[in-house]
Length: 112
Length: 114
Figure 1 (cartoon, rainbow over the protein chains, first blue to last red):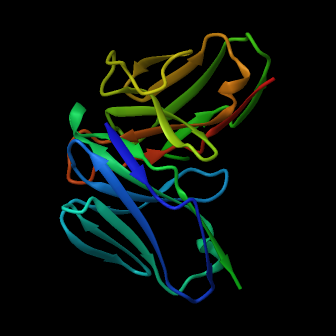
Figure 2: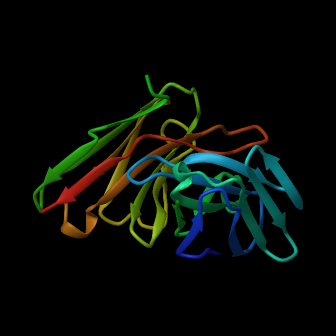
Figure 3: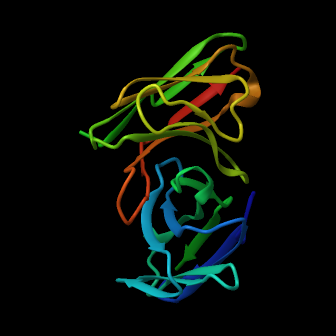
């Protein structure tokens, strides 16, 4: 089975940096995804990590440590439009490696 | 046009009614999924299909059925709707091969069962 934990809510200030953590316990591992979801809208892809280390993409970076079962999403120079839910998802290797199991999501509120 | 289209966008139905949610895609992906999303619970997998005629149950399939009529279409049915099936439903697609097996999501269907 899979278990994915992330904080329920976070609040940060415009222009600041925020780190959203995700821990997972899985029987196997084939990659970890981060998605952004604005209220009432579809999740959109942010990042993908399969090897240890940091992946940087503009203001967003994602880090993975497979030995610790840990990932984080780092958002720099926060903007009001970054207020959204951030979903951590682990790829389930049990069925051809393509089912994603999602955490409950972290609601990020950016204040001015 | 959107890559993954869900219809209807919003639906209110009565307890006991049968309802079908439709999903169609233009991405040419072979794999399709239905998830429901509830506050505090995240996205939970209902059914998935890796090809036409291939149907697999997810973690919460009770009370639901699906049909994969063609590669581009995957429909979800609630045989006899009940109020705790009130949720936001998402269809998603993915490639079978490739490095990044991420999903493309539809815009969602907000279903209310009264």
